[in-house]
Amino acid sequence: MNKIESIRKDWGLIESLIDKDSKILDIGCGEGGLIKKLEKNIKAKTYGIELNPELARKAISSGLSVIQGNAERDLHQYSNQSFDYVILSQTLQAMVNPRKVLFELLRIGGKAIVSFPNFGHWKIRMQLLLTGRMPVTEGLPYAWYDTPNIHFFTIKDFEELCSKSKIIIEKRIGLSSKGNQFRIKSGSNLFTNEAIFLLSYQKYEPIKIKSKNKNFLKNTALAN
Amino acid sequence: MSEKIKIVNDKKLDCKIISFTNFNCKLNSGSNLNELKIAYKTYGELNKKKDNAILICHALTGDQYVSDINPISKKIGWWSRMVGPNKPIDTNKFFVICSNSLGGCSGTTGPKEIDPDTNKIFGATFPSITIQDIVKVQNYLIDALNIEKLFAVIGGSMGAMQVLQWTIDYPEKVLNAIHIAGALKHSAQNIAFHEVGRQAIMNDESWLKGNYSEKKIIPERGLAIARMIAHITYLSEDGMHRKFGRRLQSRDIISFGFDADFQIESYLRHQGRSFVERFDANSYLYLTRAMDYFDLSDIFSKSVEFSSVSNQHINYLIISFTSDWLFPTNENKEIVKILSYFTRNVSFTEIDTDKGHDSFLLEEPELDYTIQGFLKSNYEKVDPNE
Image 1 (spheres, rainbow over the protein chains, first blue to last red):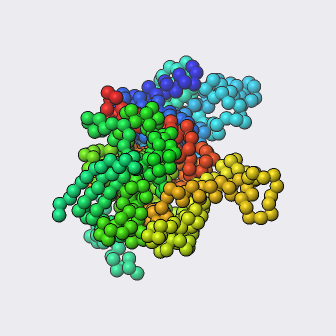
Image 2: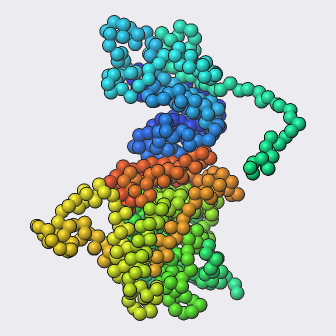
């Protein structure tokens, strides 16, 4: 499965995770193929961010609202819960601070859809074990010194970060290297080439506190 | 007295002039202009649905002659590479309107024109104007042309300021807003450069406190110096280096004097001289002042958030240039940030070039491509049959 096919496969899956008429931000949207498809197929209201100026301009020229920008620097400009879904496809491993980006996704969006290459796949493990060199595969084709992927992690690593951070994994879907789709369960780490997670924060019921004294700060106190 | 509108074709100026009588136009400064005229050009045809009108707002020293030949300078219009048949702003498809701004000097009411109250040239008695006033007057024109909605408002630099003002004052009339190389407010550094330019004009002894027209003279030297200073701010260091370097002008060795030894000196002198022929010194004072007073940093976010008329339908396109230090990328991005915060339809791109602030007027294929695509694809949404 080549890179383009893999991304397209990814798109179909991502679409299946999203409710109709949602507001969506696609981070690293490229020339906007996915959001264009989401606008057409499920009447989504979409926005995009793309680092590459040429790709961003392609997206803008096709009538999409896309900002040329950087996922690590520019997400702060969105207000809390601006979107129903925030999508980060095949990019988390290229972030300088992936944990911070992950938290930002769930600050600005109700749900986050994150897909990433799984470094725990058996072929990758075998390469490192047998050759003693950093693995180079079809899905991760770069040499160690010029790869954009600076933070490799496995499905287990990601799940651990989510549980530590009180992030709920609503759905987890795996793609095998042949492009077969399956539900990720224990043991899938070995066979999952690419993983797609649907995430949200735990929703707490608001706790109502009764108080007789409604004015916590009186104006006089503020004036001082 | 009742309001009256009249449109005439001005052969000498090769444009239309619309006059508004008894309109009692109240300006930000508190002054009134009871009579107004606006010189404007149109290109292409307004369609039956009247949904293909684009207003182009010109920059500080621009005019209504956006395309074709400018009858005053005899040169090609200032944005003719962008506007025309099959150009990025395609006049086969769109009806393009460009009016000389209030306070300008190409036929619209400004300091060069006759004050109807005194029958004398306004000169320095012309009231102070703001970008908001300029837009207010443009809106008179759009109303008079019976255009309810502008498909797009487009402008660079001072034109970009007007684009933002349109989206605040008349959001219901704007579908798409293209803002090129502008800012939410005019910066201290920009005000400083304008002030030097104005001082050069006002210290020219021919300025005569603004009444030079009566004596049939012009403060040439002051205006030329003002233009030379401004022109430096429109370029970039890299661009200047590429175009001129330290190359000498029509000589092999330096003169050990104060002639224009260097090409850059000669170029600036030429820019100054030719500017004097086409621009009015008082207009320069009034319009630079209007830019200095421009500050939407408080109002803009409120207007986006609380606009009584929703501006959620507007597609904003913000464009900046890497080498523009007059209206740098970070200032353009301030606008993007606010619009993003309120989840408005905003697109942004920074174009990599060494041509500085003037890039929007020059050959920049990426600029053409983005504007053309943005207009075309958004027009297909409005009018799918096109």
